[in-house]
Amino acid sequence: MAATMMQSARKLSLHCLSRQFAHLSPQAFARKLAEAWLQEDCPPDYIPTGSEMTWIQDSTELAAQLHRIFAVVGVPYYVTGGTAAITYGEPRTTRDLDVVISVPRDALTPLVTALEAAGFYVPGVDDAMTGRMRTLQVTQVATISRADLVLADDNEYERLKFQRRRLIPWPDGSEVYLVSPEDVVVNKLRWGQQSQSDKQWRDVLGVLKTQQEQLDYEYMHRWAAEFDLSGGLEQATLEAGVRAIADQQWATAIYPAINRAFELAQARNRTTQPRPGLDIADGNRYRLTRDSAAQTLTVVAKTDDREIARYDWQGTVLTTSPSLQDRQQWRAIAQRV
Image (tube, rainbow, N blue to C red; front, side, top):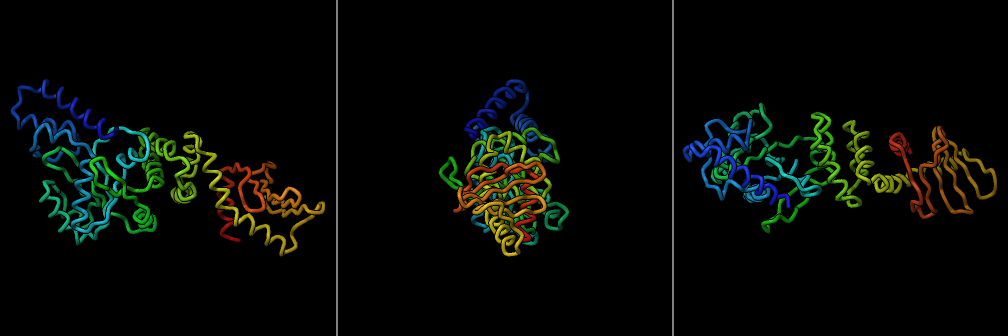
């Protein structure tokens, strides 16, 4: 659906512009089209080759072509940005393709050679090799299509994104590596924090609403906390209607730490027994209650006497409703116990 929308948008633009600029020569009109579609990213002196048939190509076709080039050259990559958000969430148009590549700066030459042989204009290679730039902005001459090839950072999160990338079937029958949907959410929250873009927020909600229980919310919360995005992720899960799923995953993931905290309190004689079969571990912030009759383990926040989780004796979540503060505090408790 998204590919059709992008092709239709290009067809409409091409039709209207060809009537408005009918007085231009074919070469001048091709340049006008490139300026309109690429805007500030249009390379200087770039004159598209090809024809109306190639000019309506969408970013999914470009991704498939780049996949084949990366495979031949042996460059690990993943598609991110709008195209990834479309794949996992709400269909929409996108102007260009965002790709992260894992290649040493001094080993860019084979990739650049392969791209140029496939009809791509590749400026700024020297700047990328010397570290002055970390993005190669490549343009396919025949189709007026462009991609940002971003050189991957060397850090734990980036390495995880490559480990978690997914090989997704593509409309033309090929396959393309995409960043995971969880990393789309985290990245879009990061970009949205910088740009205050409604488009980024809508992409986040689109992925959450579409993927729902397929997502690893604990992974997203881990990296949201790392990038100071926890509040934004909490708001997004609430607005997308998936807060209950996220809470359920949290309660399941934190149960071993809760159970361990209770066992430690017992071992240190820091539990009380108001009546037979009812054992209470009273901590600084939370009260843990093990009820033998009901066969439950309950966690209550002491500040407002609010139950945040209840489990049966097998550790199955019965109810849960943690706040953001509960998440943060139990993350710290889990590290200690």
